[in-house]
Length: 130
View 1 (cartoon, rainbow, N blue to C red):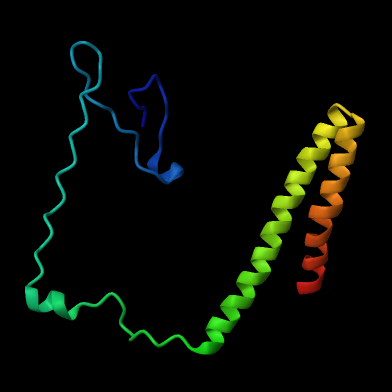
View 2 (cartoon, rainbow, N blue to C red):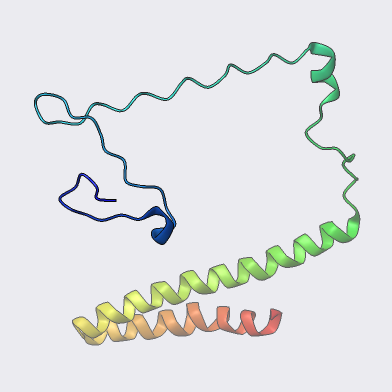
């Protein structure tokens, strides 16, 4: 079977696929525009009685127990410590990068004091709280 695309031979049994589609061309040489998809069907309204029966949660929400609250507090304390350490380390990195870029004696003293008085206690808290 010889197709209409310049002698391209296509055998559906050998290639295991349908033959190529030949589009009808308009007189100006362009393909005809594709047909638009039909609009989706309109949603069916839910009767008021059924809407009241539909629930977001199928199981009732259980009360929050004290163990959950204690665990959430412990996790928030650990995360707060780590977040403070992250901010302090990023700030210290910026201070030291600026100090290394233009080293002056006063900047070196300021960066060292920030590292000793600001970052070191947070590292100690990080290791103490885990």
